[in-house]
Every structure is written in structure tokens, then in C-alpha cells.
Amino acid sequence: MGLKGKFFDKNLMSIGEGATKLSVFSLALPIFFENVGVSLIGLIQTSLSSRFMDGFFVTPTGVANSTTSLLNTISSLVVTGMSILLSIYLGKKRDEDCKKIIGTAFIGYYLFRFLILGLGFALAVPLLKLQGMGTDGNISRLGYSVTYFRWQCVMMTAFSVTGVLVAVMRCYGYTKAGLVSSISSSLVTLVLTYIGLYVRKTPENEVIPVLLIVSASAYTVSLALVTALFIKRKIKFKLHFEPTWLLKIIKLGFPASISMVMYALSTLITASICVYLSEEMYMARLFVLHIVTFTNQLGYSVGQANSIMVGRGCGMGEFDFVNKMYYQNLRITLVSNFIFSSLASAAAPFLMRIFTDDSGIIGIGVALMWIDVAVEMGRGMNHLGQFGLNATGDTVYTTIVSIVSCWVMSVGIGYLLGVTLGLGVYGLWIASAADEIFRGVLYNVRWKNGRWKNRFLQEEKQLAIA
View 1 (cartoon, rainbow, N blue to C red):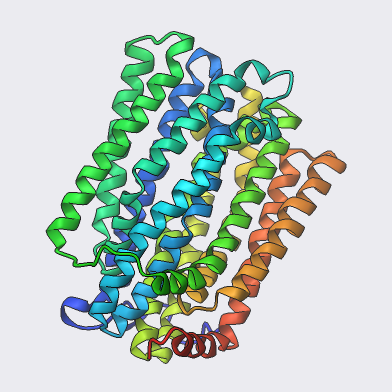
View 2: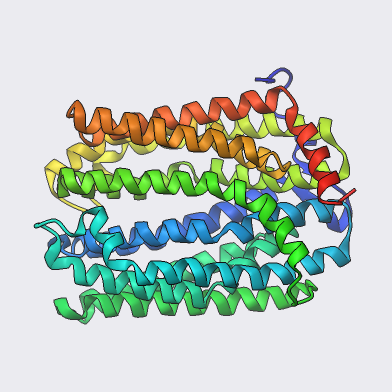
């Protein structure tokens, strides 16, 4: 896998000079804390709601959040493509074109969000029923789930500008905006959720409105702070729509987004299988996911930083540096994921009690956590490989691999092991490990054979970047 040489070379940690200089950890650490903040929002609400009214609202809000997450991934096509294209143009120092890319992305992102989240709003009932909210055990909570889901769609559309602002600043190397956004949202969520549910002692029919007010407050604070930082950075752009630029953004963003959509969809399906198996398995799965999100965040953040630097480095023509940097970041990611996932597994009995005291759910969660160590090792290879290849414009390959792996491994083998062979959620987790490892290996084989360089040079000509 190209791991010859020193394990760590500080010369591979940065690229560029002066004001345009980027470094792995100056990018990764703010992204890390940003992602941790985002994860905390979900953990806080799930933890507090799981102990409120004996977890009555865990499944309806959990299923709704899973669905909005999928729609959010689909509608993020424009931001994904913009990030790839903007990083390359910044490497070429094409400032005027960068302004046009950003302006077009603002309008294009809103159009896509309105379309996708609008469809979700209209199809809320059948979407949620398909995921188990129409079963005898959940039908009484369907109304709560639909209301929560629809209002989340409205708010996510209204506050779309936050995502664009954060993505733009990240491409310019200003990653603290995402950190400020997520930490502020987490604090608002923590305080208001606790007050709304426990201090106020909210009755059942008012829980969903309270949770929605909490979300709206968190979105508002985040947008205000991110906008202030964006203005402070004085990043210039031209807010007008150019179809030519949107097509270039979509050309890069669509394949890259499709792979993420397939992953999100397969995750949604396996979650639905758990709902049908038993609420105990669903809740254990949900709680474990909230925990393991933190175990791979440093590796994920290094992958994100690596992606930005790969795009910038390729734009500068520094292919040899990019290749060596990639392998060093891969080593950092794998070590990080192994250490954090192993520590979390050892502490699993304690960590599960953040959500519940039910011994059955805790027992399931502890077993899943140990299986998840294998998942996180594959996920580390996956993050570096997919993000790195996408940054060079080699998005078709990652799309094909992702689609095949998600449906064959995660869904197909998951159903075989979990349902047909009766392993339940354990079978689904084993299949998830197979999926992550399979994709990670194929991505890194692609990187090793060097075809990403040719793909970048082809994209450079087709997108008229050179």
C-alpha cells in the first residue's frame, strides 16, 4: 500500500506558502471538533429523550432523523461538487472564477434543497411507514414522527446558507467556522432540551414542539455566528446564477454524492430492518451509533483535510507530494481509529448507560462495540480513499464501488446474516464491517495504481481548468 519510508514526516504535513499555506492538522482539528459538536447534538437529544417517558420518543424521532439525514445527503450534491471544484481553482489561483463558483453554488444549493426536502415533506407518511413506523407497535407514534420530520425539512431548507458558508470557508482554509457552528448548536441544544423536557416537565403532546423549538434556536445561533465569521474573512463572490458553472459543479458533485447517498440509503434500510426485528435491537443500534461516531471522528477529519490538500496539490501539479502525503494520512487515520474504537469498546458498559439502564440493550450494545473495531478500520481506509479520489475528480470509480458494496455487502449480506440466518443486529454489524473493508481496500488499490493522476489531468482539460 505504499507504506515504505518513515512512519511520520513533518514535511508532508503542509502544502503551499504564506497566506495560502495549508496543513493537515490546522485543517483537521477544527473539522474534528466541528464534527464532534454535530455528533453531540444528536447524542444530547437522544440521551435526554431516552430517559424521558421511558424512551417513548426515541424511535419516532430516530427514524425521522435518519430520513432527514438521507435527504440532506442527497441535497448536498452542490456543496460537494463546489468544494472539489473550488479547491482545484484555488490551487490554480483563478480568483475571478472562484467568485463565480461560490455565487452559483449558493443559488444551486437552495434549489436542490427546496426540491429534495420538499418531496420529503410531501411524502412524509409513506416514507416513515416504510421504516417501521406503521407497525402495530409504532402506529400510535407515527403522528409525532411525521410532525417532527416535516418541520425538520422546513428548517433545513430555510437554513441551507449555513452549509454553503462553512464549505466555502473550509476550502479557503478557514475551518474554525464549522467548529463555532457545531459547538454553539450543541450548547444551545443541551441547555434548551434539558429545560424543555425536565425543568418544564413537558407533557407528551408538547414534546415534539419543544424539540422543534430547540432545533430552530440551534440553527439560528449557528447561522448568525457563521455569517459573522464569513463577513470577517472578507471572502468575495458574485451572487448570480451561471448554468455553465452549475453543470461543472454537478459533474463533480453528482458521482461523489451518489456514493454517499447509497451509503446513507443502505444505512436507512438496515435501521428499518432493526425496527422490524425488535425495538430493543433498534435502540441498541441507535445508541451504539451515537458512541462510535466519536471513535472515527479524528480519522474522518484527517480524511476531509487530506481531500482539501489533495485538490490544492493537484491544482499546483505536486503529484508526488500528494501521493506521499496521502499514505502518511492513511497511517494516521488507521492508528487513530483503532485506538479510539478499542478504548470505546472497553468502556462500552459504562458508555451505554448514558442512554439506558436496560441490561438487555446494554448487552447488545457491548457486543456491537467490539464488532465495530473492525468496522472502524475499514472505515478509515474508506474515508481516506473515497475523499482522496473524489478530490482528484476520480468520482466515477468511487461511485461504482460504493453502489456495489453498499447493496451487496451491507444490505444483501446484512439481510442474509441478520434475518435469514437469525443473527439479528449482530449480523447487520458484521455485514457493515465487510462493506467498509471491501470499499476501503478497492479505493486504496485504485490510489496505488496511480490512475487518479490521469483522471485529474482529464478532468482538468474537460473542465477547462488548465
